[in-house]
Length: 113
Length: 115
Image 1 (cartoon, each protein chain N blue to C red):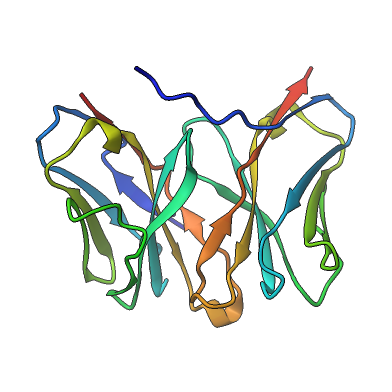
Image 2: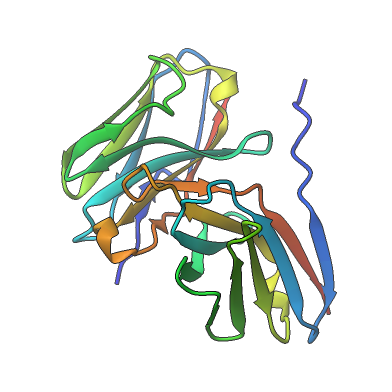
């Protein structure tokens, strides 16, 4: 029979509202973090990144916040649009691997028109 | 610019058959990665290459899996013999030299179904 699937945390947000997606990372020595967006049937797509010497970085409609004290990363999407509906993954570059990424479990965002 | 190109996009085959997945990385990228994505385990790194040389294959599930990179513009992931539990989406990604902290760029994956 089929395996039980992984139930992703889901955020339902009204179109036009702001979204906040949270992520806890594993290694306090990681120094580079990335947010990816994955739409159905596609590969993960780079959204924004941040290095550990920064607390905040802004892009177009997106902001990433890094709290190294509690090993927490968040992605804020301003004025959420239907095209933002996707699964969002945070990833960290592990300090002992050349560009080796460790991915979080993912968060499903559903935008309600 | 062309992104990472994977083929085929979908593959359905019977268990016991050999499966070959193909990847063309972005030109100029020194690193190539193979991932597997399932609902149960999420995204898992299988193996990665630097300048065509395998660096870490600790994520390869078992000897049925093998990967090669004969040149800078082509890599294959082979499963022989295939089993139903190999059904997943397989992604290839590439990136420049990590010193620049450049993100990995992913292809759109191969959805593999083993019957």
